[in-house]
Length: 355
Length: 271
Image (tube, rainbow over all chains, first blue to last red; front, side):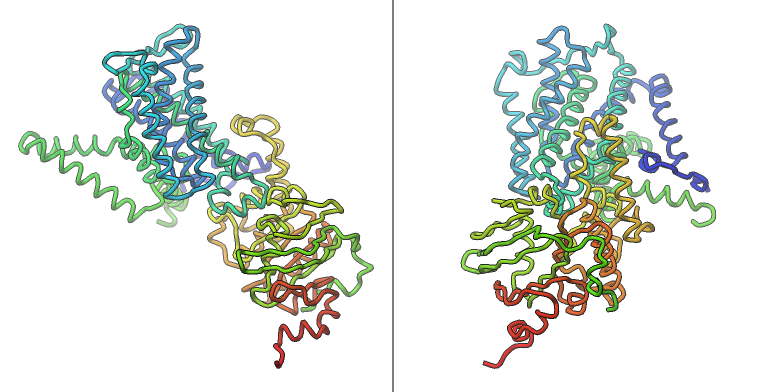
């Protein structure tokens, strides 16, 4: 009842294949994005902005890249943090060495550098698949971090091995407060999400999914496996690289290569799986779940037990509960949070006539 | 089965023409196993050509050779008078050879529409950047491909399941969608690997009707493998019979039906 799809007739094919075909859905998204741009920066505290929302947006972008590769193209990969590092350090070096480069230029270039590295590490996908490919992509994770660690040039020969990201400057204005950095992240995420949606609903996305679902048939249809797989690796790495650069410049600020370790790759993998493989909205939901749930549990435990119980005990309990939640999630909704959202929408459409 | 294309050959919209596809002494081995031995036959334009034979006769291998999934050790493939060396699936697709598979090879997690649109790959030239930014060429191609896809959907009477995910469809409809996906490529030659396996009589009749309609409407040449003799004898123009990877009969359905070697292969022979 909340949705009134009745009366919404599509008279052209382009209307039928819009990103969000239902009018009500479209309005919700407009309102949410508008609120994200206009309300959140003024009302959210600095802790929320720089501690939660900025990493959420940056990691959502990385999850989006991982999802393009894993969810849409069916190529298991475990190197997303490596490509994040590539993007972050590329962005640092471009900002450092090319004076006139605007920030968005650096961001795009660092994405392209990550994409080129992604193509190289995607080459095994032409020979191996499934878990074996995952192990092969593990190489990127370790190799990229090792290279950045080994050669001082990437870190501008900093003796401590820790680099400090430059301020974000766009059109001569520096974006340094949490609210400003958040706006930059939100803008990049919004643009790149629309681009991703365009790709997955068009011929590019169909080729990816065809390769995922039945590669022999895809080949017989004239889809080049080589091109499609490497393209997916490149675009996925591009998203990871840009996400990594945002993560570094807006959230970490000062970092060493170890910040992008295998654990981060695993977290991104979980975000994609819990959010929903092969969905765009799932990337945001999954990243939110993985990032926010520990925070909520922490707040909850503090509120309930206060100082009465030892802090180490509560933090251990949080971990246990978080783990159990993930297990339950996988048992009851293996298709992820995006599927839950879909079911909710379906229910809302029929409510109150059918519950 | 009452449908018949042979009844009045003269009334066909696309009369049978010159050989479009010629297979010349094809031999295919997997290690020591001889799948196909010295098989030659041709397929004429606009005709419906059936390949029959007992299980393991090398029929599917033959289709795989034609569209480049297998490379034969010996023999030549000639397409429209042009010899094709090293046939690959990509080359076959660009020549206009499309196919369906014995065990349905649809893109299971995609909708019917997306499957058929995926069959339009050869007609999508927009690069990923054009698609990403929805530039004019990407939009135009998307619209044109959609129009063609809708034409096929209407043709195959699957409008009601357009947006349904393929894995949720019953077997018979999946077979039909797979035919649709192959048709979306606007093929010159369409290879069907057991299009009617596991279907009930009505579904078989529907499928026969679609094959004949496509042949009549688009002039598509068919090469089909089928075990149902009723279907084969009814709809095909010429039949080639394989047994143990060798040709044992080739000709019109009537000729093949009366061929002693074929009868022996199917019914067995006293030694």
